[in-house]
Length: 422
Image 1 (tube, rainbow, N blue to C red):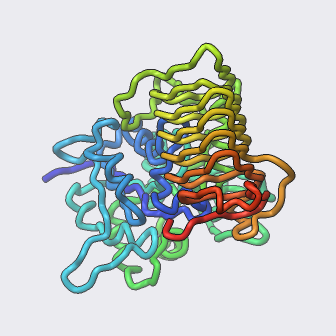
Image 2: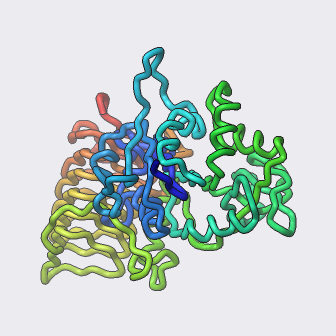
Image 3: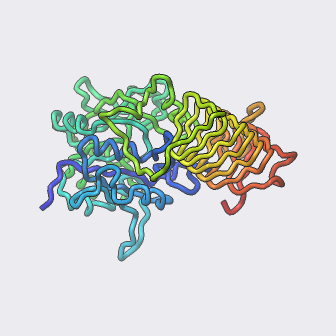
């Protein structure tokens, strides 16, 4: 009988709708990050760096790119005969096919997978946060306190606490109460959505709560364990942790990588971030180009000027083009004599000659101001921006657009241009 001390279940099914067109064709954990990574690389690398060698990845929304990226787990040293990484999509059952309806429902549907490893402990992770964390230290804390459930928490400013699930703990870090997005928070310890359960406790509570619609950890499973009087503890984490769920937080997290002293360091020897890398030639930077304070991916050719930006792999930036404060993802081509300011440009985009992005005064976006804001220009993958057009701030473009789509060759600030069929 196989016996694993702790296995991890990584929830990677989210659509990430607040990332707008960036996630219209790809699950949020598969979105590119930091020039050569994808968001899911961070929790996967944390697992292998923490000695957790069995990871179930639960996918749902647009899983193709995620599945291709993870493959059999070779980059993370998770290609193993026993354990390793397994992609767990929702599957047809004989009676009815069920989508995963909530975070805990997804775990419930994979009880047999977890049982097959006969684990002592199960670590529940989310696939869309950027952080480095040693889960072994959290497990030691869990064991030392004789906990049934340990919730990783992070201190947040009290004025922001109402955005989170908040945990109230005593001086020994034992959890006495919790509140979901409270109007008047009684504590500043926010749940990070990272849990360690004793497997017996988790299995029993999932089965007991299985009938709940949209079964969720924060709303159902953890309150159930609390009511049963099982010991719940709060493990405080004080490192860098970023939920890149909005375009602005995604932009900020990328920009923090290029700070003079980056708060989040990709270059640490002892805590590597692993990813699936294409075999690409080195980057080429021409004699006329300028690059300052930027990350430049492999296989990228730069003939223009790049300031304070994160450029992915296989990107081309034409002569006379100036890119500032922007994120440009893999295999995108920006032609000559363009101006790019504070833009997030997805993969495989073509920006033709003489285009100006992110110019003029800010105006509120006309279709989704809660998504497209902070002056960012967002361009969805495989889009084409025709030559010579001017694009304002808080704008979004998706699809193969042509000159006729731009009135007077302009997309004013706050405007949305999404071609049907995209």
